[in-house]
Length: 113
Ligand code: FES
Image (cartoon, rainbow, N blue to C red):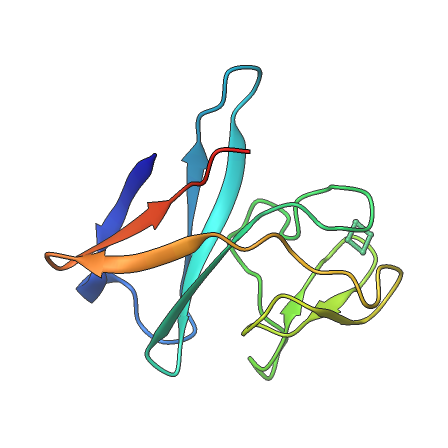
């Protein structure tokens, strides 16, 4: 399944955008962001206890913009691979989603489970 998120030009470095993945039982939330002109996307589900990382404010980055942060209990994640480097879920990872630019549009490809 492919999901068109937004035009590539609408997302600048260190900006993020949330999107919804429709699934049969319930919809899931995810987010895409651009860092050093590379796109990354993850499910918005912390590996600690599954809560959304942000407080519904689309703010996923640490103050210095170098890490992703879960606002619930402070876990920090490497933005490039989703690995938790500090916090209650250290050494686990965010679930990544494949993203690419197709005809100027950021598109997520969701793999079947
Ligand atoms: S839910 Fe993310 S650190 Fe606890």
